Length: 155
Image: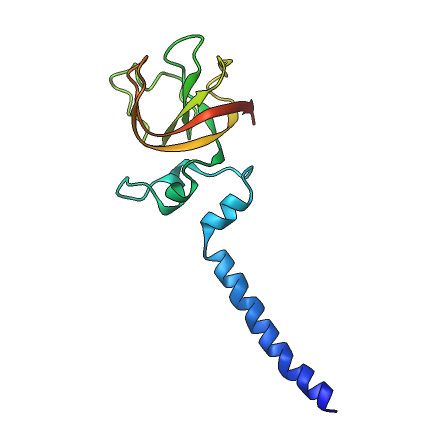
C-alpha cells in the first residue's frame, strides 16, 4: 500500500515539472526558430518598433536562416544581389521617386549570378544573417540587415 501512495504523490510533481519545462520552452522563441533552421522567419521579427534589431535577430546573427518573400525588380541585370520584400512590388522601389520605400526589406547576396524571378512569385531564401550598416561597394546600396552566401528557390 505504501508503494501506491508514493506513486500517487509523485504524479503531481512530474506533471508540474513537465508543465514548467514546457512553459519555459514556449517562452523562448529564439530557441524554437534556431531548432529548425528551415522554418522561415518573418521580416518583421528582425526589428523592434523603434527600428532597432530585435533580440531574435541578435541571437540569429551569423547563423543560416530562411526567409520567404518576393524579389523586388533588380537594380541591374546579371547581379548576385537583390532585395527581398514582404509584398510583391511591380516597380523598382529604388527607381520611382513617388514610390514609398518599403520598411520591411532584406538585402540578399548570392554566391552566383541569380535568375531574376517574376515580382509576384513567392521565393524562399536561405543565407547567413548579417546585421549592421553595410554599403555595397559596387552599387552604393545601403542595408542594415542582409543574407549573405544565400540560395534562392521558388517557394
